[in-house]
Length: 131
Image (cartoon, rainbow, N blue to C red; front, side, top):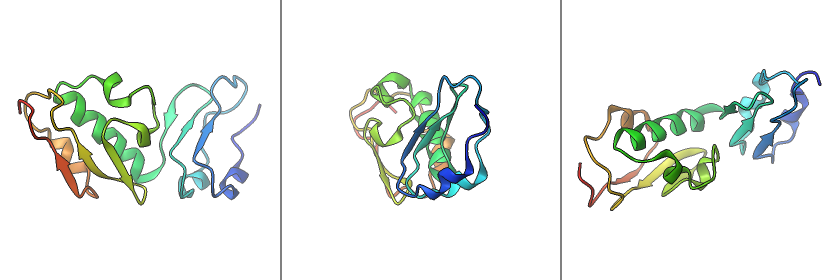
């Protein structure tokens, strides 16, 4: 019960925090957790997923791009849910999405504007799709 403790910000090696199902706990994420260098996501008590900082923004852009080109979210996430480090051919470097390899994934349509939100990306491979 109570709040998510700010003291978790002292756990600099932590990569995932799962608090889902703790009905008496607040779902407010302390600002101090935003700066944890390895934190990929927090599964909040209310079941919402919170991804801190730039990686969270990158994850939203990746999802938007994938689904806009006809990709199924389940196929992208490969059973990893919010853990972007396990997503289909999405590569992370220095806490940001650095590369996407979605060649031969049967993607269709146009490359969405959301791709511009991935401002740290170094390589995008969309060969052999129907774009």
